[in-house]
Amino acid sequence: MSHIVIARKYRPQRFDEIVGQGQVTVTLKNAIAQGKIAHAYLFSGPRGVGKTTTARILAKTINCEKYPSKEPCNKCSSCRQISSGSSLDVIEIDAASNRGIEQIRELRENASFAPASAKFKVYIVDEAHQITQDAFNALLKTLEEPPPYIVFVLATTQPEKLPLTILSRCQHFRFRLVADDAIKDCLRKIAASEKAGITDDALEIICSEASGSVRDAESVLEQVISSASGKITREEVEFILGLVESKKVDEIAVAIAEKDIGKVFRIVDDVYRAGYSLTQFCQQIIVKLRNILALKVAGQNPQGFEKIKADRLFWMLDLLGKTEAAMKWSELPRITFETGLYKISSDFISIDEFLRESPPGEESVASPESKIQKREVSRPVVEISEVARILKKEMPAIGKIIEKAVRFEMRANRIYCEFSAEYEVQAKRVMVSLEEIENILRKNGIKKSLEVEISGAKKSSNQKPKLKTTARQLEIDEPIITKMEGIVGGGLEGPVDE
Ligand SMILES: [Zn+2]
Image 1 (cartoon, rainbow, N blue to C red):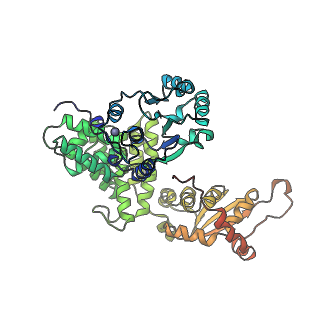
Image 2: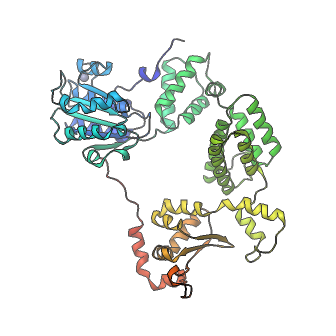
Image 3: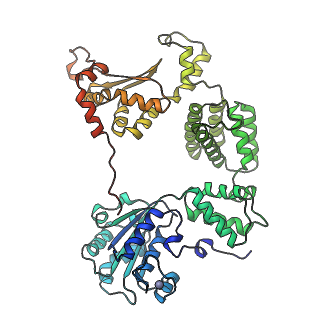
């Protein structure tokens, strides 16, 4: 098969052809059709999701003979020049390069020349967060008094790195990761016009590797099409990507679930000897376990994983994630990997099971060694980071406070949380929201009551007796604070796109 460059060949030429960014393109084309053009746009979002492509289509549409219209005609000489990259009035600047920074510095001077042949002179600045301080100043000067024919499109993956003075002058559009289904449809169409047969599960593997980036997905598809003969299968894609075949990943996941540590180690050995990257294999197992967890949470019970509970899966994922990170730094990644696998495949009991076995008060009694081991293994299931994670999502202010606790313990049917006197004010906010917090935890599978205490008088006043306020008491004394929590705890969103 002849060499093709899919990304270029199938680059969208109209807003309608951009994959998975409907909320951006619809707003943009409606505004353009009404002749409403901003002097500066900010396109932010992950890499490979269509920011620069959209910027080029924007440049074409506003310079098209048919303007004002919703889409470029792609036939007039202006459209054709911009499509081929030969227009003098659409200037693409890569802010990550020295040349780009130089171009931005010269902006003020160059921007004063009217467009050569088009209506608008469009500057598309890629990687805009890389602009240096003095280049930003030059840009700002042009933005403050823009000539009427100038349009800027700043594209960036990190909008938070842009100075406020620039941000406030831009109309901001947020691009998202593209949904797998949308990418799959797009790849299927490309494969069809390239007359390349490809199975559905092969497309799925490509999508999962691309993680929301159309550009990455297209580049993998191109590799696959150019090296495959005949219909492209899942196995072929895995081979080209250097992925361990999914059968092996399924096999090890079941072995982990069945605590068949011997089999787990045998599979690792096979994979290692076959020359695969163990870090990538670890990532594949993580994705597999995550998918099983998603099915479990949705109430399904995938075959081979019937007995395993969601909370154990969660703990396995947590541990394996840490293992994967550690492998990257380890001199002996295989051993790091095997240690992690051993932990998640060994005898594990959930914290509820453990607590049933050991009623409160007996914890200090010398326990048999096996029990100590079980306890260590079971502990990570519910720990402060997990409680804080849940709360940060649903009650951001409370989540942050919880992390300040000096003691955080799981007791029989309650979570004990102690704050030092220094955090008295914050602790009281937690106290007045107990019911709401417990409801949220219950919804997330932690069925425990929360007990909050403020302890230890300030160091300077050792003489005073320990200050202890119990939560329930406070709830009665200061009901008004409960109402305030709703106001204070709400998350703030940035400005809405228009
Ligand atoms: Zn045109």
